[in-house]
Every structure is written in structure tokens, then in C-alpha cells.
Image (cartoon, rainbow, N blue to C red; front, side, top):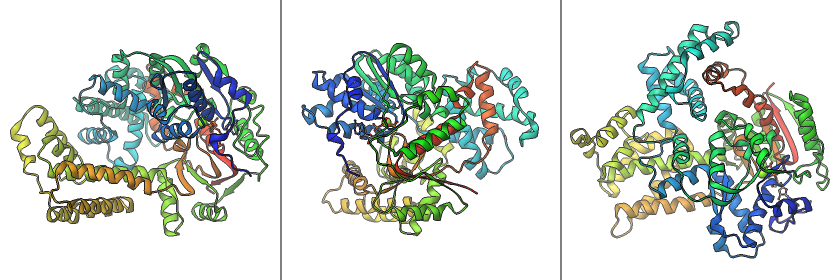
Length: 596
Ligand SMILES: Nc1ncnc2c1ncn2[C@@H]1O[C@H](COP(=O)(O)OP(=O)(O)OP(=O)(O)O)[C@@H](O)[C@H]1O
Ligand SMILES: [Mg+2]
């Protein structure tokens, strides 16, 4: 097969028509038909026609997609300078809203991550003596489910005060089937109460901080800037209601691309209803020819989808010409049914040396399992989750050391929140609170928490505190600690080391550290992170555990149902769409490994 350089690909006549179309446009098309490609060419076309780069906003969902969008524009043949590409606004929803709010001084306090929600849930369940389960079980199994549920509910703008408990209970009484559940109806109702209490506890505990949804809601409330003449959104099927509202608010001209069969963010409130909405106001256009996968992979994906969907007629129409005439034929996808999925995966990787391989799973837990197996067998790979883990580990180590060396009380409090700190999360919160309320006496305690910027003090800190904990958290944490310590050693050889310069030095080291970790041919990724991407070979391992989510889904549905929202509509067939996204990442060969 000839490898085409993406910068030299010529748009097809249909793509050209879309690139040159004027006014609000929505491109709804099957996987691999060149939606992302067309979007990047559209940006180039705008610039070549005199649109200022500052007037263009591209919105994506992940940092990875953001970088790929930038690369696609940067590497394409174009008639304008690099400096113009730098000026285009390419953002995730998150980074765009945050930058706007910060630049305009509209946000006070910090943006908080997921840990605080998790912690609030745990604390609230403990305070209420909600469950007899062990703490470990609550943390590993219970908490993530409640967390997802609360995030989901909040995405509809439903805050604790708006939840209608009595109505929700009535719905649970109707929906719950004791014969099919390990919980009685009475237990389900008390779980509902505990979950709402945890939600309230969370909202109350973050007095001065905001989470991601708060931030987007604040944006909607306070945005008063000028609209962007051009706003472009890839993978628009994954927008939730709030994000859709933002897109409308900030745009004069809209260009949206997506595929309803690939909507897989329903659990974050991603709503396929947006399609219907935007289709009314935007000119719909379609791309037909797939330019990614062999006909064998397309046929398999299509038949699988049509065989399982409840809306066959609708999708038969969409998938009518799901063809790739210019791609050479390949083998028919292979489905393996085996309990030995680890060694099977490794064998397929070894048999396809030289190809790009995507090992796609449903959960991060599966990725960790597979990466351990590949580590033992010396098979190189890049993993989407290991990068995230490494970044998290670096941040924790940095924040901890910073707090100990620094004289700033804010740095110390932030160190108190790291896993290395001797404070529990609850104590860290109390300190943060005391600081805000200017309770000097209480804060004084943390002031004595101090080391010097010397080799001796730092060595001791690594040896006694950082290494032991990192070892227990796994090889990624450990190797990250080693690399940070090496950087510090290197820095301390400077004549007059200072506190600020040390952290600049570590940050700079971080950049090159991530770059050195080059992409291997094999990538381990969850489906959700593999969106929009493609690999020569795909090994898909669905391994979906049955029904363990049913109780939390039922409670979530009851809470939303009481507000007239039917989540079933949105997440129906989500599992099917997840399979479809995975299959259609493959260019040449597709393997599916299911448990026996
Ligand atoms: N006109 C063209 N000629 C040759 N190759 C093309 C053309 N248009 C797109 N491609 C290539 O086809 C592949 C799929 O394109 P792209 O990723 O843009 O599809 P997509 O519709 O965004 O897919 P998905 O739905 O999975 O996001 C890419 O490798 C792209 O470079
Ligand atoms: Mg795409």
C-alpha cells in the first residue's frame, strides 16, 4: 500500500464543496469519511481567504485531539506563515472557558479536580454510617459509580436543592425489581438519600472553589465578549447541553462535524438531541466515501450495528454506502473467544511487527492489566493512561516538595492535599478553611512544616517519604520519582539555587521528559480516548462486566425522571456505539477478543 503524506492529500470534490460552503454547516457522516480532515482544511481555506486567525475558534474534547488539530493545520500545504497558525484559537471546551474567565477576572478561587468529589462522597457515607461495607470496597467499587452518577446529574444543571426526593422514591418503587437485584426497594431508597446527602456535602464543602461544570455554568452566566466569526467543532455528537449552549453563544458562523453512531459520552450528559437541534439551523452536508478501512472491516461493522440496533431502518439509510473503493481488500475480521486474552493480544502484536496497533479496551483497569503483561514480556507500547498517571505523579511530587520548601502558606496547604502529606484530606480542608477565615493560630501549625533547599534535606525526604509511597503505587510512580529526584540533583549543582528557579527547572525538564517518551507502534487506549484515531491493526477487548451498574443507573434515572428527563433515551444502545467506534478505528485488520 502506498503511504500518502497527509499534507499532500487533495480534498475530493465533495469535501471541496463543504470546505467552500458558506454559512452554518453541519457535516453528519460515517467514520473515516474525512470529517476531521475536511474541518482542518476548512480552517486553512478561511485563512487563505483573508479571515484573521484570531477570529477562528476550534473546539475539541481532549488535549490529544487539540494537538492533532494543530498538527493537521501546521503540516498542511498553505499560503500563510507559521505565526498565523499559532494565533488560531484551538481549545478544549475546558481550556477555552477557563482562559476566558481568568482573562476577564470572572472567576475567583481554584478549579478543583475529581478528588474532592470522591472524598466528599466517602466522608458523607462515613458520617452517615451509610454502608456496612469495608472502606476499601467503598473506595474501589462504590465511590466511582456514585461519582459518575453525580457528575452526570450535575451536567443537567440539577443541583442538590433541585432534586425531588419524594418523586424520585416513587419512581424507584415502580422501577425496582427485588428479584433481579441484591438490594431491596427499601435499601434502594436509603441509597438514594445517602447519595443526595453526599452531593449536598460536596457542594457545601467547596465554598471558594469551582468544578468543571460550575466553570462552564459560570461561563454561560458571565460571558459578555464578542462572538467569534468562525467556530468549528469536531466530534459534535459528544456535546452535552451546556457545551452546546456555549457553542451557540460564542459563534457567528458554525461549522460542526460528527456521527450520531459514534456518540459515546452519554454518561457525561452528551446528548444526541443536539443533532436534531443543530440540523434545524445548519445546512446539513454528507461525506460518503470511507478512506480508512478495508471493505471487509466496514462490512463487518455495518452488519454488526444493523443486527443489534432497534432502529434498523434509520441506520440502514446512513450505512447504505459504507464503502471504501480506494482501499485494497484485507482479511475478514477475526473474533476470538478465549479466557487467555492477554497472551492472545501479545501474540497478535508480535505477528504484526512494523504496523501501528491499537489495543482498545472499555476500561482503564483492563489497560493496566494488559500493560503489566506486556511489561513482563518486554513488548514496547505507549499507553494513554500511563501518561496521565505519570503526569499526576509528577504534579503530586512537585506540589509536595514545593510546599515544604516554600514560605507561602498557599503552597503549604496545597502540599497538605498531596498523598505524601501526613494530613488527612479532612485535615487539609480544615487548614484551607482556617486560612481563608484568617485563623492564624490554626494555620501556624503548618508553618513549622519545612525543609531547606539542600541536598541533604531533599535526599532524606525522598528516602523516607516519597519513595516508599511511590513504590507502593506502582512502577510508573516510582520511575517518575526517580526522574524528579535526578532533575533536582542536576539543579542543585547550580551555584545559587533558588526556590522559584528549581520549579522552573523541573517544569522545563518535564517537557523534554514527555517528548523523550516517544510514541511506540503499539498503543493501549480506552475506546473513549481512541475516538477520531486510526491504527493499521485494532485489537478490541470489550470484556464488559454484566449488570454491576444496574442499581446506580436505576437511582440516577429516578432522580432525573423526577425532573422529566429520560436518560434511557440517551444511553440506549451506547454499548453498541462503543463497539462501532472501536471497530472503525481499524485500517487493515480487526481482531476482537471476548471472554469465554
Ligand atoms: N480526499 C481524501 N483523499 C485521501 N485520503 C483522505 C481524504 N480525506 C480524508 N482522507 C484520510 O482518511 C482518513 C480518515 O479521515 P478522518 O480521520 O478525517 O475521518 P473522520 O470522518 O474524521 O473519521 P472519524 O469519524 O473516525 O472521526 C485519514 O487518514 C485522512 O487523512
Ligand atoms: Mg474525526
